[in-house]
Length: 318
Image 1 (cartoon, rainbow, N blue to C red):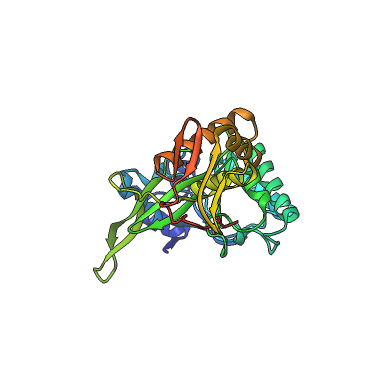
Image 2 (image 1 turned 45 degrees about the vertical axis):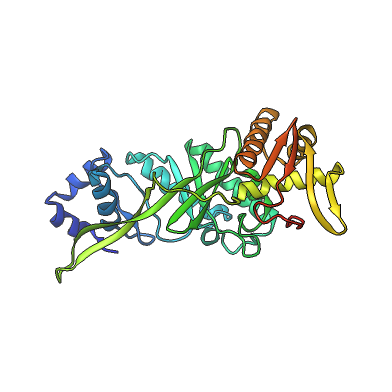
């Protein structure tokens, strides 16, 4: 990563210091990143890559980057960050989206499995969103034992408006929605890495990096997504509760449940806040499992297709 101090920027751009700061206030010149308590510098590598691929001038990119983590659970640290952001506002940089990358780096040594610690973290983020009328995006890791969910306390997912999971699928990176609070869950999106060259080194070698681009032609394999697994667990639970499990000896040969009985269990487990959102989420879940071939339906009775998705004779994982 290359950093330019103000004197280097003056030479690089041919502008005076006063002109640089004036253009910054007008949103026509990139802003520096903070390197320390009293040190800032400009970075051009990431800006050049993004700008080159999107045919966008660097002066149109308005991003403020912190090179050190912020302990969002510490009220004093949060106040210091707010002071920095108020200063940025006075210079014309209006916060729109906070990106916390990653939760673990900005958690200040707290216990990710503690709902109490997670609650303090969430409270601070809610306060920032309210004060600056913006949103927060949290980058988080999945669990080691449960790779289909974010690790740690359940309070985090409960507080989210939306959650997306990124999974490597062959050459693609598939982004799947695992929670959408008050809207329909979008379809999965397939992305791939694209190499972008943006210059040459002093030795004459090409300098390149990679960006993510949408892969419109990718075929996403019909497999259990994390959302399918979550929804199918409610089907298994409904079948067990309403005597819909058929066995020969100890081997499960069929599971079936009525629409109403399944909906009852689904709504009991759903994280949406209102009945209409739960109704829409259930309709999406039901439709997806049938269209992907995991369930069959006849006269509002849903039956598990035991020959599909590796389900033959096995109870679901809890």
